[in-house]
Image 1 (cartoon, rainbow, N blue to C red):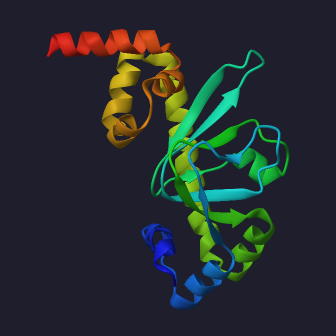
Image 2 (cartoon, rainbow, N blue to C red):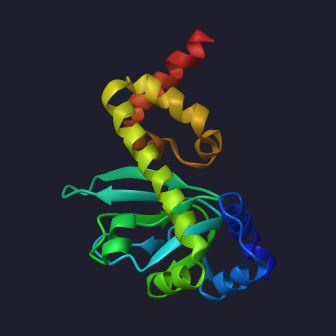
Length: 196
């Protein structure tokens, strides 16, 4: 096995246990790819043909509305997944863009080999079910936070949960993720500094 895929194998083995033979089958069905900062892994309107595991780098998933306004849905860093799951599963046009915020290296699970991999390594079905369950729970909790928390509390939660992301992502993108303007985020941060 090449060393670069090891983080993926380690990640999978934290959830399910792969045998050496299963690892080899998995490795034969995936590929790694490097993207430069600014490149897209997926563009809105295209059918999502891959699910990507981030080995190195950082991506943003966002929706571009009719006015050209970006709405950041999520960030992904090392050991996280990125794609448009609905588009990947249904093979219909994507609602989202996935763009690299840094030079990024990913492991790609192509749609055309995904089902074959699950048939050949049945434990992967359990693995993907588990990560999809986690993604669904996180998504639902985010909806509740957006409906019930103030912008300040959402920012404090984000900062506590994702300290590595805050250090790597421009403030205007964090503001977009929180559903506020960058000016309002600056105001919140100024207030927090004054309170210290």
